[in-house]
Amino acid sequence: MKNLITARKTNKFTQADTAKILNISLRQYQYYEKGESDFPVSKLIILANYFNVSIDYLVGLDDVPNRKNNQ
Image (cartoon, rainbow, N blue to C red; front, side, top):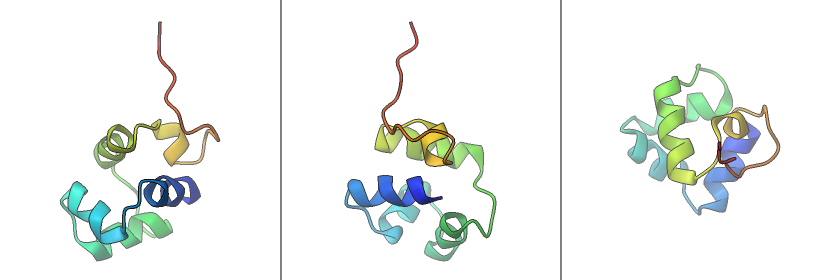
């Protein structure tokens, strides 16, 4: 989840800040960020919206953080 960490740090958020946004414990967030637990899609959507990046970017399927507008 390298891109997730990058997005979090770019926005100057700690793991605790991000856990609070997701309404989960810090430890649970750490499990997600380390890849020790699967990140629920609902939580990825929240972070993608919050950080204004695509879910593909967060999970490492895309190297471009900016969302693409569908037309």
